[in-house]
Image 1 (tube, rainbow, N blue to C red):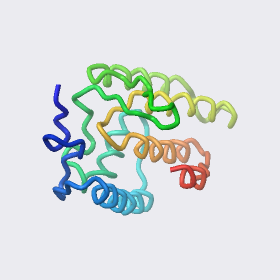
Image 2 (tube, rainbow, N blue to C red):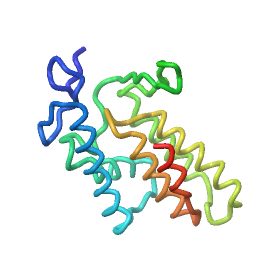
Image 3 (cartoon, rainbow, N blue to C red):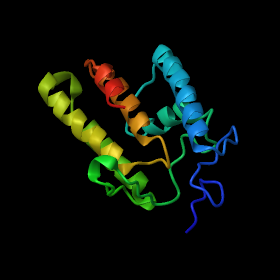
Length: 169
């Protein structure tokens, strides 16, 4: 099946600026996402459920991709340098809603006000890892999940050292 997210005959994602050079698209996307992050951090966002990932993705990528904030409609495989070119097994696109509902059940299971900081961190790690492995979007999953993590931890009374994320982007 052809990838409906890319320009025909290329691997370049269709984008609102109609950029067809991968390097220029990477620069444009990076700039737009950085500006969106500044705005999002100023305004804040409520992350009461795993589905907040859609709102975050839309906020980050709405100036780049028409499909920002929408779950992907194809299965994806991404060559990961850290895995010697192999891919993590991401969720099938048909299973995204079901698996996010499962993560939501996990979030609702706890009375977060009465969990120790150590337990909160353990639970948040599992929740965020699950959302990342679902990989609900064609592109921008890691940035959306990192943003989700920041706001989710803030909501739970924890602080994320964002320097770690910045240094390992």
